[in-house]
Image (cartoon, rainbow, N blue to C red; front, side, top):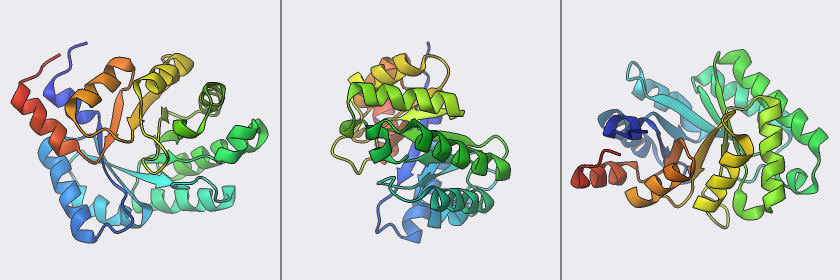
Length: 230
């Protein structure tokens, strides 16, 4: 696969999820996404309307997070949060499932949760993209595979390695495991601790086709310095 500057930029979810982020920070994030040609910005739900206004007509998508970062809110709360974010204009949703239920192997609960959130997103935003965050640093290999099987069965679009708020971020080993578990049925988003171009490229080589990072500008600047085209 040839990876050009443009295709690489479109793989980036330019992210700002800090609890103290201000409106000016979100406006700057959106301006950077437009300037560098990123595929999406990822912001907390309260900032979805602002991001949508800032990005109108740009082609950059608005992604938000659901049940973030712990995944421990109720299904009803996650559904309501999803519906509101979709009404506000979000088209991509990074969902933290109930991680305790995942560790317990409670497929019944998790299938209900995933299906209801996915249905809520797509009932408002046609073609909505749902990424299931597995917070891999907290899970065993079998629990990660279990989460992948559920994501496939429930109709998600991606599995994702990390929130960036857990005990660890993306690793090449976890990206390879998730890619092997979902095959070509789902995308794989690597996120958490990706702060330089070399790390991002290793994640792509391991099987990621989306990169979540707050360091997107740095990655693109490094690309320009190296003149890369893979």
